[in-house]
Image 1 (cartoon, helix red, strand yellow):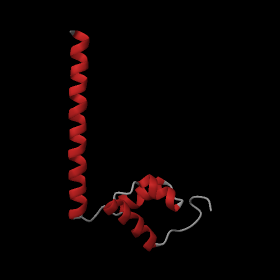
Image 2 (cartoon, rainbow, N blue to C red):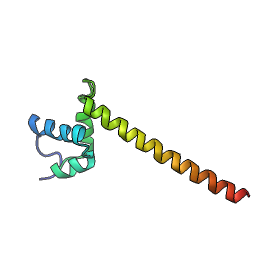
Image 3 (tube, rainbow, N blue to C red):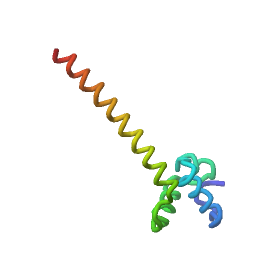
Length: 88
């Protein structure tokens, strides 16, 4: 069935959003699994951003943020070393 040609039940929407929020499933993956567009799911997310994030989600986001900071730090050091080698 082509995308956009059927209505998704409330239960399925909630299940998809729960998997994204609590299990870390990507929007792209969820969209592909259910034959939906990513825009549709992002629309659901935007409409549902009224409740505060759960403790689980906050913890996941903090871990992800820490990992990203570490990656940025390593890349910054590598870039600095590369620039010093070019100048030196």
